[in-house]
Image (cartoon, rainbow, N blue to C red; front, side, top):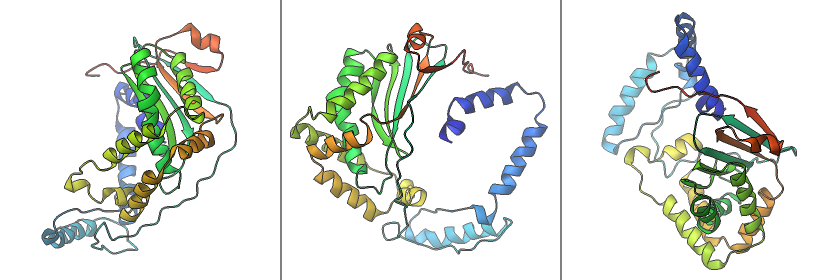
Length: 292
């Protein structure tokens, strides 16, 4: 879904639209989308503001909603985000074993952009905070050195998002070699080649990211968009604080060692992709020029 909306599929679709001379069909589809989206039953609303202005804002929101078609099964409620309780499913299930998926998109670049991802867990899972610390530890202890300082990439790292554990590099002179380094990184941490001080530094970096200031407009939006309450955030913090070396070894082995993954490389043609024999190659992907 994300690739369809924000990835190369979307880029190609926009290029197709830009080449069209008649937009009647597109306008018809946009109207159909509006009819589906702009109804009371399809909307969820968030209104952030100071307490003395919320009543006025809620009345204006109600006026706007009254003009929309359809009916709503719920009424507007004024809540404080730190007290509201929303449910978040904790139904993570491992998928069927499958072979690695590797794709190379041939693009008119001088360097490569690489990504490799594994199935992970949702925010409410006990292992989520441990995997969060692991991403920071991998960057500090291995990826910064191997991908950037030795490999020469402009940057790289690991992150946890959308139930996926992902490695990445960008503006990278290497392609398949970078994927090999991702595998070496997994082996490095599965074998416990780090110490308690490394873990403490990674935990500190994870807390710094969690505690960065939020604008007033963004306060409460994590709960509204993702169902993550303040209570859940505190449990996550407690698990990060309690995380130790063996916990990180365990989650590395549980989710990354010999697990199926998907890898994608964007960049110029390279005979190594043919030699490797595992890459699906998409040739001559064109990017829109400025002003197109």
